[in-house]
Image 1: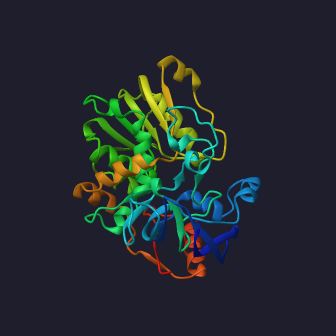
Image 2: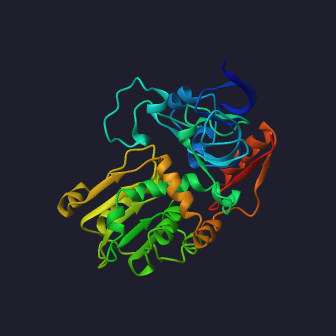
Image 3: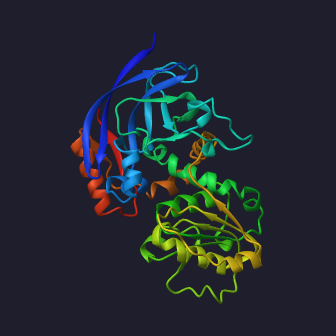
Length: 357
C-alpha cells in the first residue's frame, strides 16, 4: 500500500501570480519525504516569475513550484540511507535513469546530462512546498558543523564544482593561469572554489568584472575592470578561462576571454543567455581552444562541496555572499512579495528564505 502525504505548494500559475494549492504526494520505495527549510533564489526562478522566458517555454512549464537551491529535514523515509530528522541538501536534478528506466542511456554519460531527467523548479515542482518527495540518490546528509545558512549555498557551489571538473587536472598544475569573467554570485562561488578547494593563488588568478564594488569581494585574486583593461594587447595569457556572466554580457566576455587565451587553452561556458551569441571562431581555431559547456550538477558534485564546507576558511568566504537578514516565509503572499523584490533588485548577495510551514 502506497504511503500518501499532503503538500502545501506555492505554485506559480502565471508570471507574478502565486497560488497556494494542496497536492497529494505518494512515497515510493527508496524515496524520502522532506520538508524544505531554507532556500535561495536563482536567476532562473526570476526568469519564470517575471515572465522573461519565451512564451512557449512558460506555457509548457507552468504551473509549478519554484526554487531548486535549498536544504530540508527528513519527515518520512522509505530509504535505509536517511532517517527522520536528518538535515539534507536537496540535489535538484533527478536523473532519467531513476524516473524513466525504460530509456536507453549512452554509457558513461554523467547523470546530469541523461535523457528523461527532471529538474526542480523547471517544469517539475520545486522546493516552494511543504512536502517534497525525492529519491534517496538525490539527497546529501549535512554534517553537524555546517550551519543551515552555509549548507543552503551548496547547489550553486555544486554547479561551479561540475564546471571546474572539466579542467580539474589542469587546475592541479602549479603553473596553470586562470581568468574568470563575472563579478556576480556565479562568479563568486566559482572563484571561491578555485581558491579554497583547488588552491589557485592570486599570482596566477585574475577576476574580470565591470563593477569595482563587486570586484572588491574577490580579495583573494587579482582584479581587473573590463571597462579599462586592454584585452587586445594584453601580454598576460591564460590557460583556463571561465565565463560566468550570462545574458547580454556573454558576447563581450567570451570574446575577451578568447583574446587573452593562450594556445590550447580551455574556456568554460557557465552563463545562460536567451539570445544567440557571436564569437571569434578564427582565434578559437588558430589557438586550438577547447570550449566546455557546463550546466547543472550531480550528487557527486554536491558530496564534494559538502565535504569542502567542512573547511572553516571556505565557509567564511562563502558567508560573504549571505544577506544581512534571512526572510521568513509563511504564506504564498510572503513568497510572492520576496520574489517581486528580487525581480526589482537582485543585488549581489543571495536572497535566502526560511520556511515556516
